[in-house]
Length: 540
Image 1: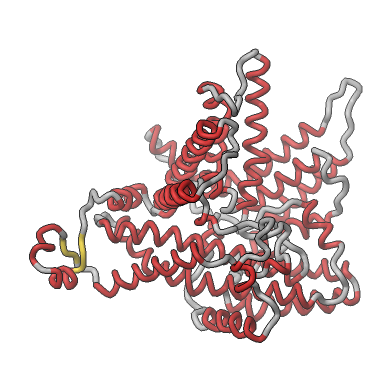
Image 2: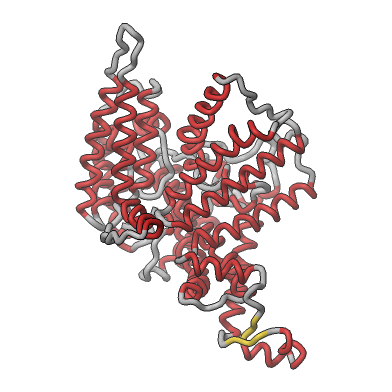
């Protein structure tokens, strides 16, 4: 059931909210039970057999978690919890691996070893990548003593809560369950208003902006997959266009997830914060899919780095000193963990060569960024500040790097991605629609090729890209608009920015003007409901 479907917006959501608010007046426990039941219906709506996968997985993970809570240490100091934790992680990775990567492994074997394995038709269970990471984080936190107790009802609510079930954010038990248990019995009108406002803004972003741009981007990649050469202008429209499409698509989902949760009561962790405004690739990953970055840092990068440091220390070898970085420690203790982590990030996003290349490319970006910071500041923290020129250069370089990498992310085939990348640097030449070229005269015709695309198509596609670029880079984001009402767990404003011009002019407040604006966005989105429109991150 999609957030942007009529079934969800006009059927499921009103029933769930009404039932929850009414039951909460009588008993919070009944209301939370209603949320669990509603989330099960939400998950099973599209394909009920998904419950046959997630159900046993929940039981196994809960059983392991309870065993971890009851574990003991023997007289020799051996902690039985390590084996339980390892078993739990292996179980979750195997479930994800079977459904998501079995065919990819067969493809690699066929390509490298010349085998003839038959690829099976495998339907990926909804949200399995997000659920897997969330369950692994839960087990690690239980093993680390950060979760002392948990009953099965709370565990089910934590995993199945429908606003974040399918595509995140990846949440921690200890940041969500205290909120559920502290919900007031009476309806919170402010939370409901803020939540529905975010839902409306997200709906507009998805249906009007992201899907509207997709109509101009998809045909270019489809043509490239069919073997057509993509010339300079269309390559940039495709590359910039998809970057903006996935930006507004994921921004929309993040807004809707945060809004749905807030309308019920809890605040989700922030997952998206204007990443295209980033001035470095490190800054980009601190803004894009924030909870995925948090998970990968805490549960992949840090353990790898710690293990490598201990290994190097045991051999009396030099560690990485950010103030005086040496090449070998830098490569071994920073570059290697970063590349491994981003390799996992790419593979997590999709079982295909291009996703892996996308992850590795971002890993290289991050390594270069860290190396540059160490070389320039001497302490790895960029402590000298960012003057205007430095910020501008960093922004342009980061923006272009992200756009180029997104071609790998979007390319339906390696050949299609290659055609678009060749087009970006002019290797496929420059062309204009024949009708436009005729108006430019014979001199232009000797330097520019003609094509059979329509002039109107080119103008519309360019206008969409320019308009959405302006919105992404110049407008405040949704969380900033409602920052006065703390829509997510984190503070939105940087210290000293509360009185800024943006804050004073654009902050949402319960008012007739804002009701008209948000109502207009919702009407515009609802009028476009009905077509095929799936959130891009739902496929992961």
